[in-house]
Length: 428
Image 1 (cartoon, helix red, strand yellow):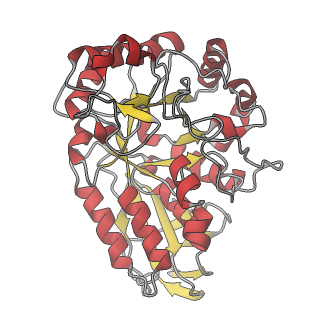
Image 2 (cartoon, rainbow, N blue to C red):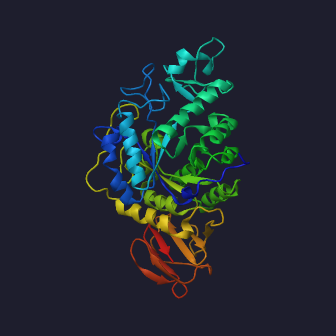
Image 3 (cartoon, rainbow, N blue to C red):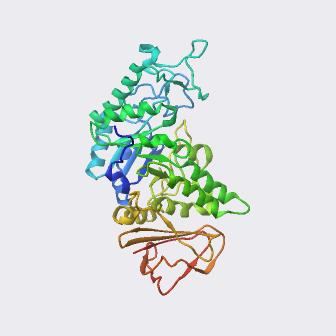
């Protein structure tokens, strides 16, 4: 494998939708979720990411159903969700709809009664007392021993099993920084020979830039926390947000992708919904996630929008109530991403900040590919601009606003009318 990977080409224009199978439907099964695929396709979703689909350990189980992330067998389907044929059918239908499927892969630890514990106890770490343990205090799991070459090969064989048997398109790798970087390189060297795969790391490239040598995309927790701090601050400082984004853009390799999000299974259950964290700022951040350089991550029910925390270890269904209110909102953004060349996450198409007379409150940027341009305006304030003035001469020509259909020639009219926390996406 070369010094760093080049992401599969389709990933540069894609988006990822995380599926919490247990909570998605009343049945909590693959078969029930399969009915949602046409709706998600219409909304513009391109990659379906399933939270772990493997059986959950009984020993040390939390709640009534346990944690998805306490695996009992890497090469089996959780019977709570259905059968191997059910999962195979959902992958096949997704592919027929020109969607991709990736699965959550938990490589750092297993559940306490994973099948390897009896067959291969040397696959696990032990403490000074000879006991299996987890270094982070998660009491329903035990850590694997990456100094054991046989364990590494068994893990890679298990990952190959999912590609060979179900034709999945990649992996979202849980807490990827807890496994050695050279293991992920070893795994990719083997697995990418089966088919081109997409590899998403649950780690922040801010803290673990070396892992971008191996993964196509990584999380942006630093940005998520910076925006949360911004909305709760008594005196909001736009330059602090700019500084975070500049640092992300400086990280090597330039081909690696950032994954932007306001919610996921952990955030929703433990820290609150995007509306608890961001309030009125949440829609503007969703626009940012879909238009800044990188790929957006969307969690189950954000299109509703879901405004409740979902239980993690017990049944707690998302309260669907007909057509999701934000279906068309996401559809416009995601379909624009798929067709507009300026929103491709190519490393040469970096966002350019656009100056206004109100830069303390407005976050504005352009993305340009040849003569195709996108101009995004986010009012990250309580101010009602009637109007705001664009001072940057880089913005010229005629555009159409994505949501309203309004047309404007910015060479002649440099005014923007913006309500508090409003967003606009101008397309050329």
